[in-house]
Length: 467
Image (cartoon, rainbow, N blue to C red; front, side):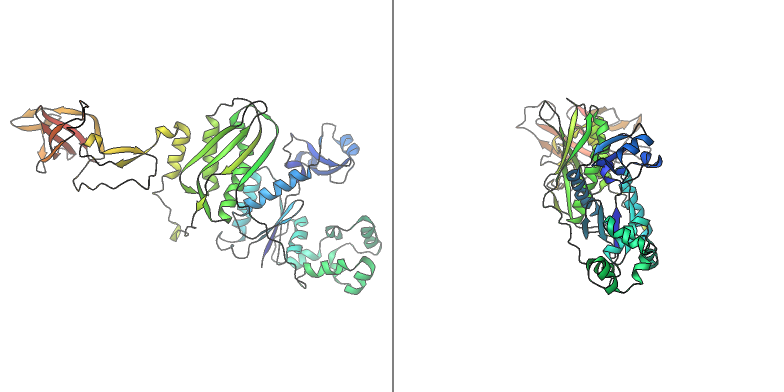
């Protein structure tokens, strides 16, 4: 097994999304500092008064443990993008078993890059630890170590990674024990006698000498997540950064449960008026985070808020089973997948402006198709067996006749087919399409273009062009 620990070491402050420089505090001591505050020398464990003296513009905020746990569970859903075996190590660490998925991502380095990019896009800082045991992986996050020589890296770690109380740490230092290597060199009975039975067991689990099973994270049956905003947001496009966290968690949840969606709903909560529901539609089943975020961006950029937003909710609407896709051979890409294009056009222009065409059971060309949602799996196929052009004229164009032959652009047309008689619509009172009697032909121009023309009692007409 190969365990990857992801330590979100600034989670208590980054989950609050406060303007920099900011810190999370508990009992007037620093719990976590953002990057700006850390660059000024602010460290966890400092008294708040000392930190303010060092950086007067510091913005302190009380730690919110419940919010941190909710964020960690949301990140566990996001981690489903990489492996289905995820465990929580509260308050700020995830454990991922990645031994079975390295080949899928092309090795360790590409996988770590995807995880780091995904976390940074959500405004989160992280450190990695990699080892065959979960406890060693957690300890190695203090050194941000992913080396294959994990035992050597583990031995160099300071004893502070053990998380012992202050009295135990002072006894260790008094005995000259400052690294794990020095502890590993001592007999287990001696360590247990001086520091309690739990410590030698802990060291044995880290080295893989004792089993250390991890309770798996239970991906929820339904995806409904909320995110409280740090301040009221008055412009819809400013909501994308917060929505990104929810959408990336949704993508991981779908991946872990082998599901896909064609729609989800982003709910915008206001203080004094009912919530706004913003449906996000997709042209085909998907669990791709980039598609989810792209459609959300298009929707938010053209949406006008009725009132400032205080909280976001995201829920998956009717997820369906979606099988995984095979990796393309020799790097081939699916050039025919236009679903992302359809989604983007719908998000910009509205659902009514983008649709597909389906064959309708009617012999009249003007009535032979219907606008349908795209894609429409129930749309019938064309069963006429006769050639039909994709492009019909909005209104048939009159053609001149010279010596009994129709002409186009001043040149006579060459008729390729015999007449196809269409006589239909007697029941329809519409002047344009009712009770027509036409003879249709496929014809070519002098330049080689293929046309669909017909003749009726009033002469020759151009009705369509073949691609």
